[in-house]
Image 1 (cartoon, helix red, strand yellow):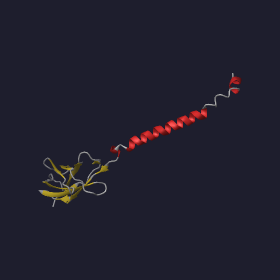
Image 2 (spheres, helix red, strand yellow):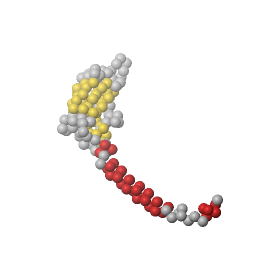
Image 3 (spheres, helix red, strand yellow):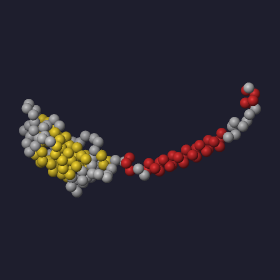
Image 4 (cartoon, one colour):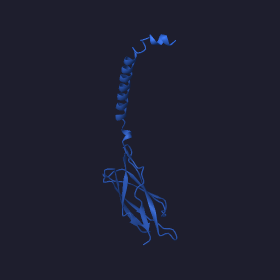
Length: 147
């Protein structure tokens, strides 16, 4: 049985050409896939952040200026800012849209509960439609402290 294999030299003849063909097909396929991926813009997104001023307020009616910026610190227009109570109480949710300079002014009336010395307001951002902007990470919270 093994004698028939020992005398057969054909098995090695086609191996190098098959490897070359597989390599060429593999490189061509990889080139096509990379070309398709480079055309997809959805893979590159920019995280948004909010910079409230002031970021520490007292209970009662307060006006807070906020600037929505991208990862490079450039202002973002057309973003919707949402302010909601977290550990501080806020009646409902307050929303506003940033102007061309990326800023928005929001009036809120935070309250602290009985025996509560401090609390927080959460700020979320809905990016403008049609862009590569996202708000996945937690933004700066607004601290409410008893004066």
